[in-house]
Image (cartoon, rainbow, N blue to C red; front, side):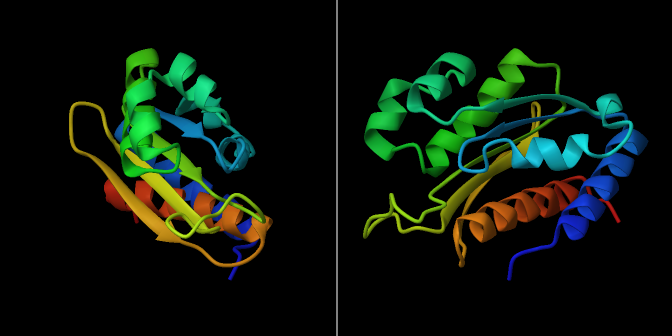
Length: 166
């Protein structure tokens, strides 16, 4: 089921309160969500205190030039892969002063899926600078908007879990 705008806003508000309480800053890199995560975060008044940057890297060229994703990774694993989102997060750490990074790449549909990578497959990466950075695949249901909203919700929940926020 697709989360509501209010549910996403509430999660972003919780994340912001947690980031501020920990004195941490966040950066994001998005592909299939097209900046929706950044929009939800920046809808929160005062988010500039903890949200430093977002890169919408829709094309492979943008992933390479803006986030230092290697051409070899894209050729071998594709844009929708754990390897790619991990490199996207590494690129955020290389180009920002963020303490925490989150990256999203997936196939929101309705086209673009394959047997190996169906519509609804989304890879997320999240982690802390100089600590473990995680990647996980999610198989999400629904139309394009539902997949994108669920991706944003999952990213926010993963960050809250990472930071051990109530």
